[in-house]
Amino acid sequence: MNGWSLLQEQMDAEKKQKRNDALGIIIESVLHPDHKLRQAAHEQLCYNELMEVREEVLEYLNQRRKCEFDV
Image 1 (cartoon, rainbow, N blue to C red):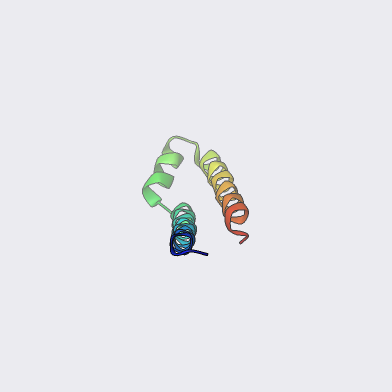
Image 2 (spheres, helix red, strand yellow):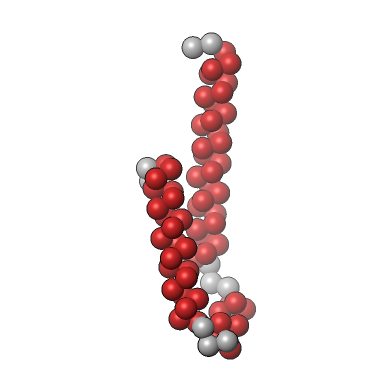
């Protein structure tokens, strides 16, 4: 393996780790309760639907993480 291939492999590994970290952060942000948004959902009578969409988004993000990183 030449120097360029090794550098490219290292950059790919670094990018992969950054994507994994980013997915973790976005999952945390969806899990973190936002009281203002939840209150707005209550006022607009769509709280249950908000929670349904939240679960769908979490499912998608977890599937994405599993497919991309075998986590």
